[in-house]
Length: 376
Image (cartoon, rainbow, N blue to C red; front, side, top):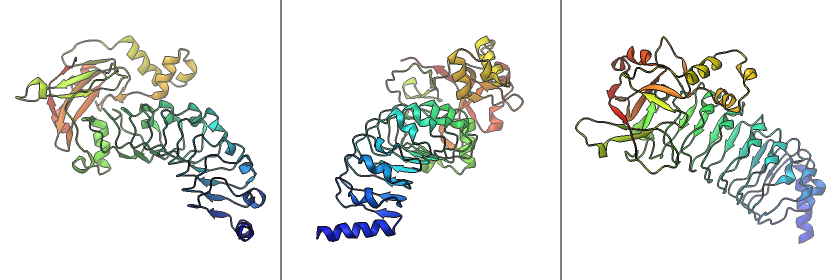
């Protein structure tokens, strides 16, 4: 019987380029695969009991796609590193806690699925996967999504549902290839204040701490057919303890006590915010950042790492004044209000007191509300 099974496997290997070996209970791959698997291009191994791939897996010289979901992998399969054609790698539903920095050996990878593991961080080496189009890291234990994720110049789909993220990297808004971003069921406190430069389909359901949007972001979402009546669930008004030093605002509603006012948290990049009557000149620091960002070849002039990172990540927003649209990095004049289009609060940023004072909220459909800096 065993010889018959072996012969069947050999026959299958000789006649097929795609193997569907799901649900077979394999702990180890059949040795026939090593001897006769040189024609195999796709290998489906879902729901087996594989703990480790054999070293000889690199002999499958034509292997392009491998699906290893629902196995018992504890370590990333470095045995695949010598495969120079690998394009699709699915490692979902395993027991991975770490992605090695050597993942950049998989140079031609276009599709990487790491869902349902125990990852707490992503190594910077992933940004060297220059052909990566699809990245899914849902149902892990990520608390931070690094800014360099926006440097994946071919990335079209990014799925990061069911993690513990509080913010989205600003650099993602500058990624022209991005088409789909799903960040549902996290701990988002805000979306980027910038709109995305691409027409991205963004889904952020079930983020109960998210209670406002910037005006540019709201405008983009509405253009894409977004409806917060069905897309936003249970947005809270309360403040939860936070370990960061982000600026928080208490937004005042008519005839409501301070305890019932909405508290919103601004992105960490904002160091200073001002009201329309605050006649303070823009700091030299902020002015220099704006000037550098608009200077050709500015990156070549930068020496301090902090300047380089700020330029690379891009401005946190742009001035809403149509006649200005200056980039904004660390300080802004700000108004908060409500609109008929959304149940969430709306925030609008300006580069100076002058731009804010010449802005008419009503013409933009914004009902302005008073706010104060919130201190716990």
